[in-house]
Image (tube, helix red, strand yellow):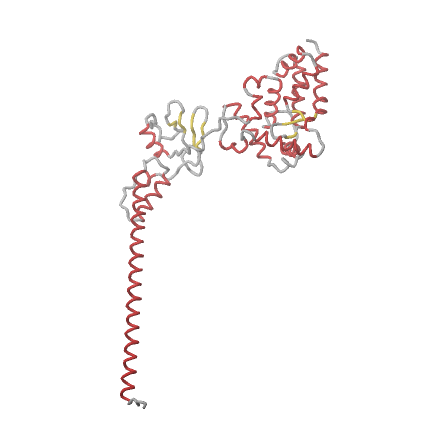
Length: 362
């Protein structure tokens, strides 16, 4: 027998269901708000932790500054400290210095900074360590850099910033110039090699073809070197000349003065020549030229020719030898480890010189 609900009973059931639904929605809302507040509190705590770590790092950075850092770096550090709300005393010289030299170079007797766009031009005597003022410059005339404590402050006050890495020099010579260093520089091959390096730096006063044309011709014989930049060849020559003069090489030439670079390039060119059926031994270095000239004459006769190469003996023979060097400069090719010449060119130049030497009076 079924029970028929009255309208009142139906209304009461509906009202109870609505109340339950409302309570469930309110409970979900409270849980959602609680989760949101928890996530918000965790985010705020994370930010506070990050801020504390950041401030601690900035304070540590400030505490480790010695006062002799680059002024731009010091200014940046204290600007970051101010932005982070750290009360740090900014050094007075950080605000007063406005112009700083962009480059400082070592000379034999002094250190000097270049003047660019109104920047300070400063010279420091290498022995006394005193700043040498230019004429009319009174700003740094009485500064003494003889003590470490004053050196830092004076460096900042006068605007000198030395990049120690810029002045780190290479003390190991490229392998390709080892035969021409020390006593080797006084041999026939050594004299010829360094005289031709001088030619590459345009130190010869005789007329020559355009430098770029000569270098391009010397590089174009091999795919290994044909795309090399002319400036790179200049850097290679400058690096080797600098080592000859000073016993070290500046960092600016480091990429052109790697110890085994010349040997690696020579080996690649040799392999290319052999693959093309060409004999690389038909191309002589200055050592090869010396060996070939020695084979032309007796030891006594060669000693006479070597003396001429050193600038001694018959002036006519010396003039002849200098003309030969000019021709060698015009006709060399690059093998990576130095210039080379074909045997035909060497014989054509040196046989005439040897013949003239034996015809001339002793």
